[in-house]
Amino acid sequence: MGRIWSEDNRFRTWLSVEVAATETLAEAGLVPRQAAKAIRERAGFKLERIQEIEAEVRHDVIAFTTAVAEIVGPEARWFHYGLTSNDVVDTAQALLIGQASDIIAEDLERLAEVLKRRAWEFKDTPQIGRTHGIHAEPITFGFKLANWYSETQRNIARFKDAAEGLRVGKFSGAVGTFAHLSPELEAKICARLGLKAADISSQVIQRDRHAHYLATLAVIASTLDKIATEIRHLQRTEVREAEEFFSEKQKGSSAMPHKRNPVTSEQISGLARVVRGNAQAGFENVALWHERDISHSSVERVILPDSTTLVDYLLQKTTNLLDTMFVYPERMKANLESTRGLVFSGQLLLDLVEHGLSREDAYRLVQAHAMRAWREGLDFRQLVLQDKSITSKIPAKQLEHAFDLKRQLRNIDLIFARVFQDTKLKSLKKFKPKPNSQRAARTT
Image 1 (cartoon, rainbow, N blue to C red):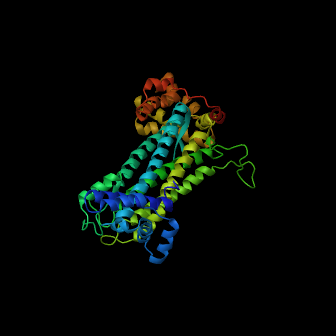
Image 2: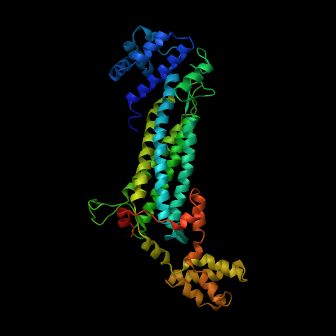
């Protein structure tokens, strides 16, 4: 990613745009074929010379074209013929964003694969679901991972759309009216570069496209922040259901040797804020004066390289985090059971309603036992079984069923079949993760 946004690659991409334009114009008879041939064969630049010229003229495109002309010779008078600066800059930027997008698209697919594999690995590992940070009803850890997988699939679709929206070029001139070239020539030059021509532009490609792209990167970063935040919570000492990989030689604190801190997750959450902040700058770039000003230009030199680089980095970090994290099924089970049956109160409520109680009466009855169990540290299930106003309403066998974990999780298979539509339900039931000694050692 760093190479893509290097000065050398930026100018090489400008050069490829210029050569494509010259050759297309030569085919149309607007530029001598010999000149186009000379430009194609001799055009080049020295980065130091461009910088030297720019220091004098204070215009990067003029510095670039001048440096190239010095190398090409007399035929360079046809170089940049009929073009304005942003015909080159914006079209080349589309190519650079395309290169960066290819990397991010691959990162997203890798993340999805890890999420899918680990979701199946823990499909049937019970865990307490939490709302407002408080125990709610049982889930499985695989269910949580499958939810992240599904969101990542939406991010893949969103990103594909946003990247495609920026796969456009423009050669419409200083205000977009094709005063010197034509829409037909623009389409041919863009096609030569693997781009589509913008239907309409001013001197620049309109920045709603870039805002959409940056906003999509911000959504991706927010998903990664969401994953990292959850792992941070699960790593808390009081919870300890999952944990970042911690090597034998790793240190958590300069003062406290016992510490195992979620530093990678915290880094992911922190850098996601930068990507979201950059998206706001992208929104500000949409409104330019008239047919163009350059208030967006300096901003994009920062936010486009930074956001694509950060998202590439964050995707790799998150993928590795999920692939290598420690998972503690026994701790998940212990936490689920720690409230001694309280998490089944919702099912008991429904069962009482089914057996003739009004919802209000059933709620008061169940809540009274739940609050007592909560305050006094008692067993909710035992309190219920000792209450004749409940046992007289619900048969013993069905009452036991209210506290059945499998009943709560009976639809996990169907949820997985819906999320992972490329996997048949029968293969889901037979799934066994491939042995991985390193991961096995991390899952206790």
